[in-house]
Amino acid sequence: MAAAKGRSWKLERASVSEPGKSRPRSNKYSGSDSEPAPAAGARDRVWVGGYTKADGTKVEGYYRDAPGR
Image (cartoon, rainbow, N blue to C red; front, side, top):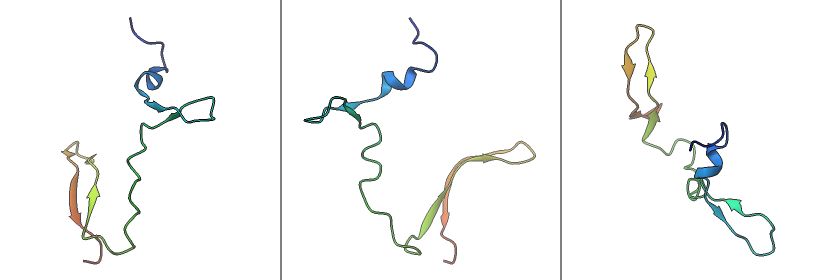
C-alpha cells in the first residue's frame, strides 16, 4: 500500500532519541556538515551541477578549476 501523499519524507527519516527530550531529532543530514568549510580561495576545484542548454543538450555535473586559478 502506498503512503499518503506528502508523507514519504517521514518514512525515510532516521531519528535519534535524546535523553530528556520528548521527541527524537532527525539525523538524516547530520553527517553532511561535520567538517568546517574551506577558507575563501583555498579550493582548487569546484563542482558545477548538471544543466540543460537552450538547444536541449543535457550537460552532466563536473568539476572545474576554481575561479582565479
